Image (cartoon, rainbow, N blue to C red; front, top):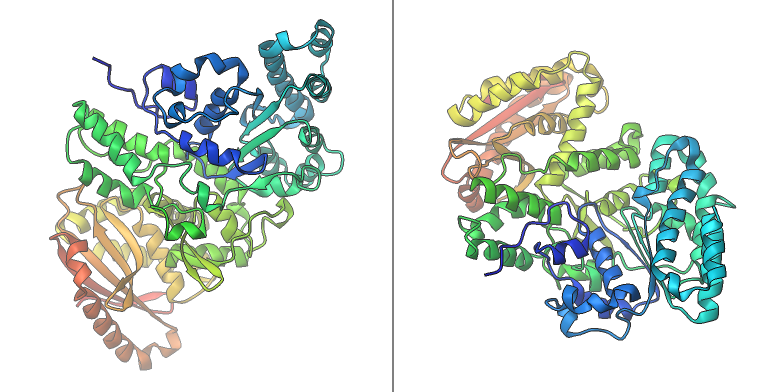
Length: 575
C-alpha cells in the first residue's frame, strides 16, 4: 500500500516533490499552451503562488539531461500521457535571482559570482556536448558575460537549442531599490549597467525564455535593452496556471480524508478558508470564465494545521508571510506615502475597492505615481479584479488575509503618529468582554478617546472617513470578529459590521453593526438631532436585511450609533 503523500509546504523543488512522495497539484496541462505563445515569456504573480515549483517543473520537463527520467517524474501527470515534441529537447540554464546575494558593497561582483556558479553548473551538466578547448576556457573565465558568449557561439555552431528559465527575475533589483534607492537602481538597469548588460546577452541567445517575478517594474526598465519579452500576466488563458482552484483544494483535502489523515467536513473547511485565502483573479476575461484562485502556501498552511490539531490554525494568516509583507511594504514605499497615494490606500482600506486602469508595466521612477499605485498593489496580490466599470476595472481587496495587511498598515501608521502609544493588550482584553459578554461600551470609548488624543491623526482629514479608518484599524486587533467596512445591506452600506468568527471562537455570543456620524463642532448643536435620527433609521434598516441573520450566526446583534462633534465622541447608544 502506497504511503500517504506528504504536504509540500514551502517546497519549490518539483523533482523532490514527485520523487519523495509529496502531494503535487498538476499544472502540466499548460505546457502545450505555453509552447504556442511567443518564445520569450514573462509572468508576474504574488508571492507564495507556486511560481518556483512551476519553473522547476519546466526545467525537469525540457532539460535534455533529464529526458530519461520523464516517465518516472511525469508518468502520473497530464503531460505524461500527452507529451509535446519539445520534451527533453533543450540545454537549460536555470537562474534564481533571489539567490544572487545583493550585498550592497559589492553588487556587480556578487551578481557576477552567482551567475558564474550557475553557468559552471550548466557546463558541468552538458560538458560532453562541448569541445575540450571550449570547456577549459569556459571554466578558466571569471566573467559571466564571457561564459555566456562562449556557450552562445558553440551552441549556435553545433545547433544546440537553449532554454533560459529565470525565477525571481526582479528580486535582485528590488533589493537594490529598497536599500539604496532609485539612483543606484537606475545605474544598474539602464545605459551600460551590468544588470541590463546581462539581459542584453540573453537576447537572441536562447530559443526559449521564461521569467517570473512579483513586480513589472524591472521588466519595464529593461525593456529598451531586452525588448523581446511577451507578458502573459493578465492573459486569461493563464489565469489559473498558478494558485489552486476550489476543485484543486477539494480534491487535495478529500485525498487526505480518504487516507484517514484529515478529520472533519471538507466542505466546511473550504467554506472557512475561502474568505481568507481565495478570490484571486488576474485577467478581466476570466471574471466570467474561471473560478477564483486560492493562495497555494496558505492552503498548505491550513491543511497542515488541521491534520495536526483537528482544527483550523488559531492564526488564519501564516506567520511566515510576515517577511513577504515587509518586503512588499518597503518596495511600494508605504513608509514614504505622499498625500495622494495615502488617500488611495485609505480609500481601498475603508471601501474595499478602487476603480482604476490596470497598467501592465511602468518604470521604477514612476513607482510613487498615485495613478500607478493600484496597479502595483494588484501585482503584489493586494488587489484583485472583481468587476468592470466601462473600460476600467474594479480592483478589490481579495480576502481577509490581505485585508488584515491593510489594517495593519493603518494601525502601524496611527501608532507611529500617536505620542501616547495605545496599549493594544488592554484593548484586546476589552474586546474579549465585548465579544463574549456584550460589554461593548468600554472598548468603543477606549478607541474614541484614543482618536481624540491623537492630534496628528485628526489633523490629516477631520471627518467621518477619518474616524471610520481609525476605528477600522483598531477594531482589526480584535481576534473574535471579521471586521467588514461598507457591507451592503438593504440597498445601503453600513459603516462597519463585526461578524463573529465562530469557527475559531465558538463562545462568541455578540455581533455588532456600527454607524459612525460626524459633524463639525460648530454645526453640532443645530444639526445633531436630525443626523442622529437619520443614523437610527439607517441602522435599523441594515439590521432588517435578510443577510444579517446569516452573518450573525445566532449571536445577539447590537446596533450601535456613535456621533462625533469634531474629534470628540458626543453621543453613543445602542438603538
